[in-house]
Length: 116
View 1 (tube, helix red, strand yellow):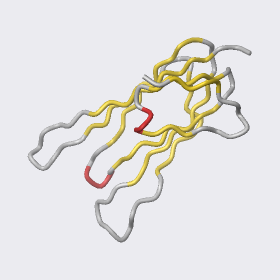
View 2 (view 1 turned 90 degrees about the horizontal axis):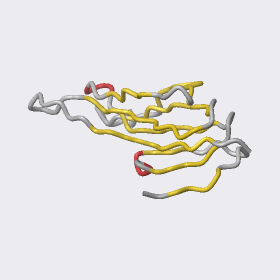
View 3 (view 1 turned 180 degrees about the vertical axis):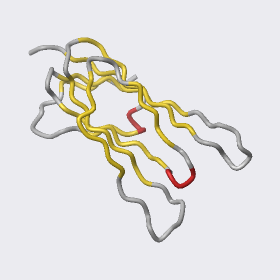
View 4 (view 1 turned 45 degrees about the vertical axis):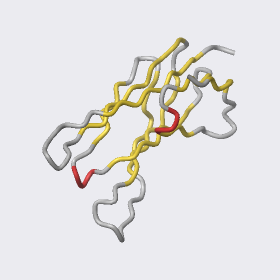
């Protein structure tokens, strides 16, 4: 498990699938972005489970490679830390492969929100 020091809000940090099981330190009011790969055309979606100490302030889908059908893209969530404590952002990626099997994948980010 990696630990990242407190993040200053001069720039909103972005965390991706490579940051799975990372711990990040923030202060109440700080924002961050989660960026996870998605393929809506094939029915694959992330289902986030947000604890009460974190709040989604925006959500959008990023670019796909339009030259390649079914190439996928990214789902972004901008999240604000609203309460002190250790919060676990979890998201499950659900979809079916070619044989119809459901393929669950989990992403987790541990968010340590502490007052100044």
